[in-house]
Image (cartoon, rainbow, N blue to C red):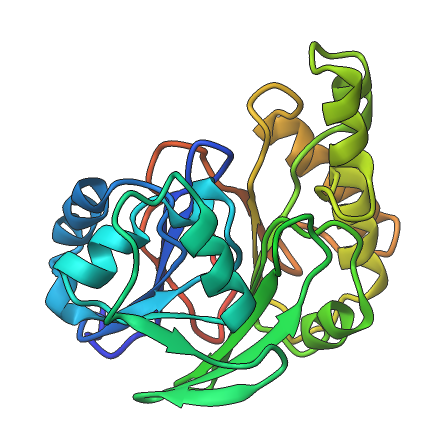
Length: 277
């Protein structure tokens, strides 16, 4: 593997914590930091990296499973923490962040495009019941990587960027019947199913099938619920929606549900469709 290759690794994905690395073996960024700084350091070391290789943390929103370690990363390890003013205000109020951000805050406006070293960062709003919520589209080495987690209802900006992406991380949180028949209280089921809640397997499948572009090569399904979903079910449901539009998972694109607690392999993101499942 070339040290300049674009690589992606999921460290964790789900309500217990979310964290992703995108970059090269020289430098990259973390997207969210909802697991401990020690766990993040361990996963970086497994890749031959350290915090010195990390340019900063991009935060999607202020729920604890996405920001648990930002205080430690920002104030003790001195990584810049990038997000909007509203999300920084939400981080301040979140009791799950034990060390509050002071010197490490970095701000941008939602919808803004900006540069971080050799990465072009595009941002867009997402419908979710946090203080604010963002998706990121990152251009690096001729590749376009997009992440949209905790999606709620897909909006026009999400759809427009989806149609230009080469590599995608997108939420497939739950199966509706598993959720409705499961143990969650009514208020929580209603929250998850609301337009500002979480995206289901079927919604994700329809979104991908209806807005598929041949430029899209690799799709990673994120934030799967432990109680209300199953990786095989998510894969089958979304594959079926794609097949109804003559798009074959494993042939026309790589489709992979990410594990909640187990780090993924290191994926090389280039002009090819990944062949490992």
